[in-house]
Length: 319
Length: 315
Image (cartoon, rainbow over all chains, first blue to last red; front, side, top):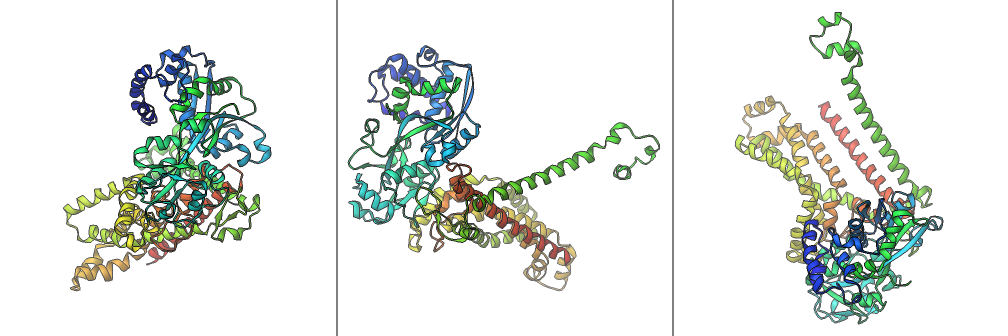
């Protein structure tokens, strides 16, 4: 059951289209892509699962069809989610065009503030990045909880869990050998994101309590993909990556529990797993027209209960 | 205006007796080429202006003392003060990478250029020329990828005794960039060797010198300015390279203590941070300052190339 939804992260559109047929077929047998969302109508599940070609999804009551053209940019962590939702929306509403771009959280915030895009996606709040006068012009729409997981190269045997204190010791450079946390006698190689990344900011705040990471032998890679490659390749290495990237590379990485809690969508959703942050979509002022209709669709049960778990995000919840 | 048109088109003299047609009076070729030249100059001017303006905002709007960029601590995160915008690790990285790349590439390229111009039989030249052209066409991401998947693991697994703990290193970056600048240096060096008049070679050989003596004492000194220009242009390319370098150097914002350790460069840090910072904050301004520094470094090299060219033509 996990396999088809994991494959949906594949980039090649041709493969996605081909697979979506398989997935649509699968979803008849097992309508819910995730254990956390058992009770939804088969129709909604069909809409979420059928990718770009979805004749059935036009009946989805969650979609308020409006014509027009909007652009979103920003967080690459949220991009797969916004992209999927945009494709489903446009499939149901052919009069609408939604152009989804990446660029990073900072780019999203800058561009939405400048009016270059209608929606700016960010892993971090606008308040933490922008001047108060600028931040107050933006309206926050929380659309998901995104989780990160600590991973290590498979050569690090015997370590399946780190406490917050152990992780802090490792990342601040107090502990430099895996043997001190129950692993093999092997130097720890830290692989981090640039200081400006949302992933790093979240990890620093939640796990490191604001302490600075060690430098020196520490490697910096600029994306989830590059980090994953580096961890897979470098013995003794450890890093922090987003859930979707972990799911795609599970076989080559060893995922670590945090304080004994496994990184699952369920524990992400109910807040038990703490290495998480809200995904934000910002608009300049209150949204109108297609922007509003698309944001409403993102907040609808179809996306929150079906699309999000299938892409390894969790529903934003009531807050 | 009219006389120059007449000279540029031989055979037009006899036709000049008649009045010029409107197309001739319009003189499109001259206008188009002039417009193209003006557009390029304007574009370069605007670019310099924009980079300089944005590059000084760190000092103007951010209130950071200029001397701070020459410190070694990169702590730009406003959420964990005190911030310090020390660019020394990046400047050191860029210059250090250029130096290592030039050290590796120069002997190879000049050797290859000498082989192509002096030694190779025609059939070998027919192979090396297109091979060089293919070399130039290899995209930088491919070099980076090869470095990441072969060189970095090789260094880590077989040369860890030398200190390559993780493989990602100054040395790895130097090797990857040296391969990228090899064709640049080779082609320009080859051109300057081929441009040497044949009389010099035959004259030297007539004095019963060996081929090596001719190369060493006649050709290399004669082409020295051209060869130096080739190396400098190669180093400029090395300074601007971002993608391939970023994949193999580890991007650690510290001054590396040895060739075996991770480092970073101006270009790499700009690409790492640009998407995640917001226009107008000092952190983003610092990236522009890095761009300005890079521009100044390459200005230095342009001046060097011009000086070398002047020295070469003076001979």
